[in-house]
Length: 501
Image 1: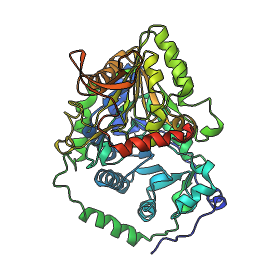
Image 2 (image 1 turned 90 degrees about the horizontal axis):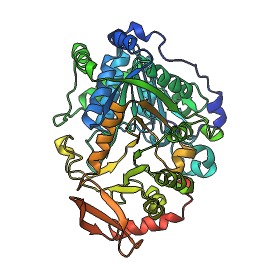
Image 3 (image 1 turned 120 degrees about the vertical axis):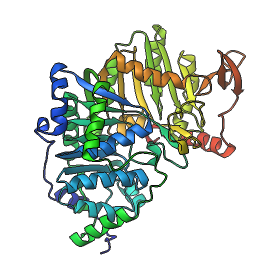
Image 4 (image 1 turned 180 degrees about the vertical axis):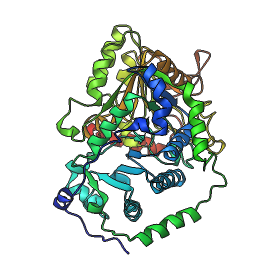
């Protein structure tokens, strides 16, 4: 049965019947709920966290949670690729649904093009429901759709959440796809997630439910004109099993339930217990600009006394950001920022918005660093096949005075501030802050990042320095490891309005 190429009107999408639903209300009745019951009780008011700073552990944790799920899986992502890791995690979710687990999947519609049939087939499973956030009316001519409905379609859902049984959650910067788990062939992303248990998970679930039940979350059946029958679904699932070629896949698969439970047992003493807050933008963020993630982070940032560490993929501070960072350095706060270089940034336009502020950042006293394509030691724990692939920064993390830490989906650029919805966790833990700071400190080691400074004479051109034993061992006078045409594109794109970068 072929999908229709016709458009679905906005009116049809808003009038389509949708059922409101909420997170599982009895998480304590599940295996995972019982497993953490004593720890949650003995750490009253606190939640447990494990930092997922390696791509393999980030994949294995998501795969394992799908295998452990007994009641519900709630998944919310900006991107879910159809590559090897995307298919494997989808298969793990399908297996959970076949066990009777209720699966709710909320995807932003921007990157769905070409996969309507697959989504419609999965949505046909009685235990799986898929909704698309702010979907395009046309399933084929998206660029034309953008022209006539730009204001609405420019608003995207950038959240990244994986919740099992309302007991355990993974939240952070990673989407679902090979490059987020160290298996990309063109580039791989450096990133962070947090594994969470305890009361914070219920807060994360409230955020998911708010999006799921919002008018912007549209059931697939209202958008995708494909109406599969049960036989087609079964045939599709059978074909997926036969098509796997995983001889070189570096991470373990197909654990038994007992093995998943044993892995959870081994992780019991690895959790850091601390107070935390869940930050999430409203689905209608555009009309509620002062209630979201950034506003709450600003209030927390007012308490900084000694040090502020920032690692972020896309960084366009704007005049307000420059003023804020200048205030910090003026009162003696050490500020260090790591972001992508032009060579590692996967979005040249975003780099263009940032580049115009580099001089002001350096003048304000910020230690400004950029990631090179092949940092010396940052890939030492990655899969062997990924070590030869260039790296790009995808982290969105902040450390405040090494006493608290934020990890989430939010970049610091106008799109993240104004257009995209975001989510994240602020954890009040010196121990976790030290772990994240150590992750960031490694990027400041010689060979792992460029230090940006002024060439002599004072306040001359910007140079990129590779440091050895505290002195520059190598110096570049233009964006390192880049070709002429890429530098030209970055310069030309500076004319774009910052809010569209």
